[in-house]
Length: 323
Length: 270
Image (spheres, each protein chain N blue to C red):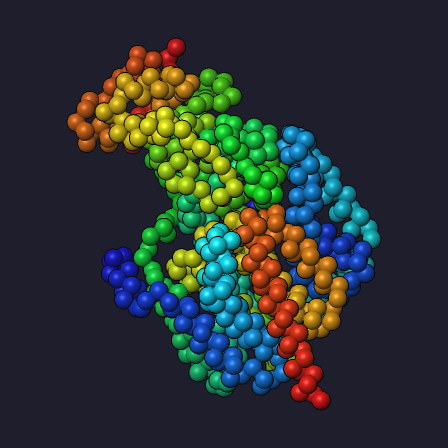
């Protein structure tokens, strides 16, 4: 059951993302972008449920039931109202040619094998303990994850904003698997999949006018996989985080949200897709739920300011050269 | 064999392989950026700007003064465009090679460069195979499963465990129903700076005593009783090294219940 979780996450993210785009009247997004937006919406809904629950000292059980109901409702609404646009996403001509992507898939599989058989870096980390504590006590952030007993000083509000470990607890409860399997296997897989989705958007941008577009995109994906595997021996590098700390909020920030925010900035300033502003705001809000403000939100804001500035200058320069 | 491989990797260079590759990629991107009307110019300027911002002394001052937690991930921020920069340059370079055989050689050369660049700080530390699906080392896993069985047999909703730091480190990753006298943040610290647990002097002393358990058995017994511990786990090797005989019971209350290849388990007998 635990191993079906990625499929569930992918399908729900896609359907919820599709519904969000329908509400915004945005029909141009490709399925990868839909999944990314859907994932961020799911994270924000979870946050919106958890914060009042912490204030009201509500049991974790109650929150998971409400979250499940919201999930089901959104999926049903999405299937009813977006059926037509979903079917157009999966027309045979829309699907990628598989042959150039075989090597990329093999390299992707190699990374997944690493998640399944290598020890992750858990030094000083309390993610699995938080999941176990939440599930055993049925309380949200009331007990010390490392001891299981009540905190002496507790977690600050800034700490309580981070709801990623609780989302893992929800998945663990939903699938009945051991917390370690969900956190150390499924979460890094989810993170890796989403990072590939972001880089597929970058690849579309880079190789849109190139010859043999599909082959080049596939080579790009192979390279990303090789960088993750080969570069992971250097600690404090994003590749190491991707391979050995894929369950941590920081990895989500650096391998998914920042590259996605930079891509969105280009779409806003470079291609004048103003609707992307909404996705950018969702991305910034999502960063608050994944890790501490200083480790997540601030780096994203730095990247956004730089990327926006560069995108504007770049666009201006192109316009001047045309004249 | 493994040592030789490690030494070979260590000899391959400093610890800046990927950074050097990134900077080389940046120069290659500069050369090619206006060539084909693609969006590589945007990538180039973004990567360069973020690099210049992060190495700026003003940025360093602000981060150092007001955002100390960002400092730990500073390197990741400027190295972040590494992936698209390196891969864009690599993929673009393949289009310059025409013959199929040359493309294969070029591909292999790229893989070797990536491996060497990424493994320059390779020490082999921290890369170990997992022993089970709970991601707990086998000797600790054996003992923790015995504790969990004991809890279930005695129909206890929770048990309070106190033991060697290695068993304490993994107990709560296995089950949320095993409570501990202190968390691993006492000796390891925590990555989450928003999590505040202040340990008093008594608890710190208890930790010190447990780490030299054979010499403090009466103290451990009384502290465990006072703090309501149900289970004590001591390391067999500590007794072997200290030359002290393994006790059958501690402070007349904790009796030897079970043992594994590495640990001894004492349970409360009142």
